[in-house]
Image (cartoon, rainbow, N blue to C red; front, side):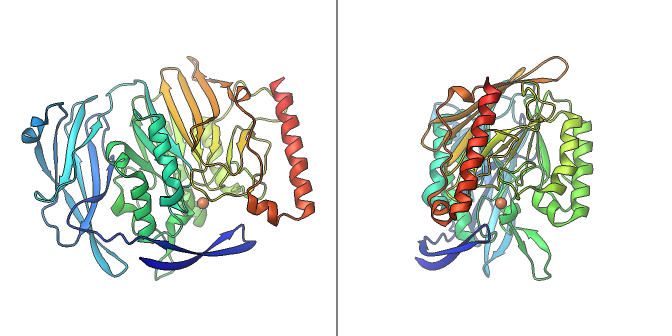
Length: 460
Ligand SMILES: [Fe+2]
């Protein structure tokens, strides 16, 4: 056991320090941190990534069509894996990835990974259909802190709510210290065998970034070794900027952190996005990035990012933008106050948080449903002309709900089902209640009343 002291900086105002112990997670000869990823067509291929210690040679994956009889084991094909040696905290560890190819669409497979002697258990996954068809996925805002202790209930709750999901999306800040191995270990421990059965798509946040010896910002040393993500993004942004087509929907990950750190990178991403959306045969389009286009709190907007990306989303009809970073919940759209929200002229924006780090909320004009001090996860399904979105608290209560229905011209109608749900959770986190001055508290109460009045007017 290692004893560490760390500090959490909130809003640059106060420092709260505490002591916490955490487990050690040394690699061994058996695979750990097993996770499904994607590199090619999800109907015909599937990738798996895992970790071992540096003694392991001959990493392989074994795969067979799944069968209720355990006799499938003898029929499994063995596929060589690629091994990457990574120096972390002065020690070499191995990350392996295997790419299963030429699979049949819409087919359940069993696989295991190992070195021929030290194997994982057999896991199941199912390939995508090779045409538009109904599917569902999970979306998580920032996990970031107390990942094993408190984020675990988000991913486990989400999987329990919808165990048939086709994949999971993480909108950045999976951890808080980009290169802290124990935090990545906690993230993998929380997901456990779910990661071995359900494909992960992740985008990096600011906390995945660090400055290297030359002072250059880089994505975590863990990022590319730990995940298999599509490598169809621009050079220098591989596995952080990418797209996947899944059963009639294009999913796009953008790297907002790299873009906000360097305007040339922002231009590269914007050009790539235009190209990727110009050439999009899918009926639906979902974009994920860490920093919100519209923040849940005044003063946290990323104006350059919004100015660059929102016109592209509108021009090409992006339906939904999934984000994190603000440690509160907000869902809405950019329509002038007083105008009907039934026919959005741009994407629905969501900011969510799945981990326990909580900020105060701003109740901004763009928001139709909000939450403060609440860990959440989302299930989203797409079936033909309809996208169904639901947000749940980690205790399993439905917290937000809407549908988008697409017409023949590609225009959406928004059916907001949230007014029928229980009242919004808008109490400030305890720490903010203590920290706020009377003037700040008064401002928050006023803002709260304005928000309520605005929503009431909308719902009438
Ligand atoms: Fe963040």
